[in-house]
Length: 100
Image (cartoon, rainbow, N blue to C red; front, side):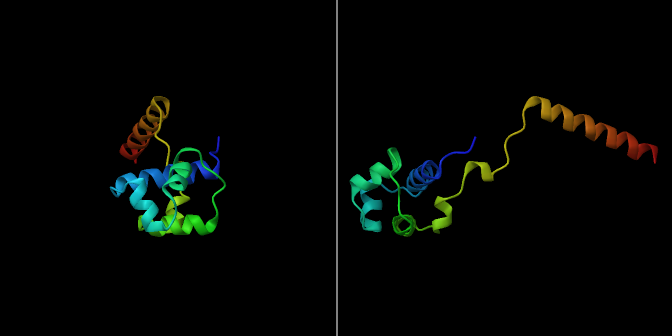
């Protein structure tokens, strides 16, 4: 199931802010937005405008596209069954290679 875009943006703003060691106040000052707005974006995402995404990205020192990246952009971790299947295929390939 796909996450709503505003939830993705919200999660990314918060995680990047924390990674950069910024408080909500510091991000608000750097982006020219209110602390209340930053808090709301992180906790109860409103319909955020592209202009505000750009302002927040600038305050965080990242490209606006960084705020839009989804966890689904990353490969999912394989489960046990998938790992076993890959191991089986690798053994078959090794056996085939030895036969050649």
